[in-house]
Image (cartoon, rainbow, N blue to C red):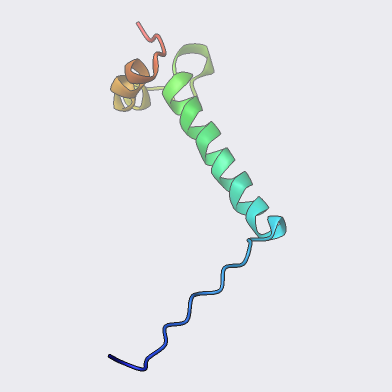
Amino acid sequence: MSDIAIAAPEVRPIPVRELLPWAIFGGLLMLIAIYFVGAEEGATSLFGSMYVHEFVHDGRHLLGFPCH
């Protein structure tokens, strides 16, 4: 056999102070994605054309948002 010892990696918790900005960033991205999939149509539309609506059309139906 071999005399090589394998050291286990040190596991340390991630401080909340380091995790919080990434959690906020991820939450904002999710809110933007839900807006475009769920509400980018009609009176709440940010863009005048239907390009965004048609791009996320199948996703709307998959997530249960009515669109027509």
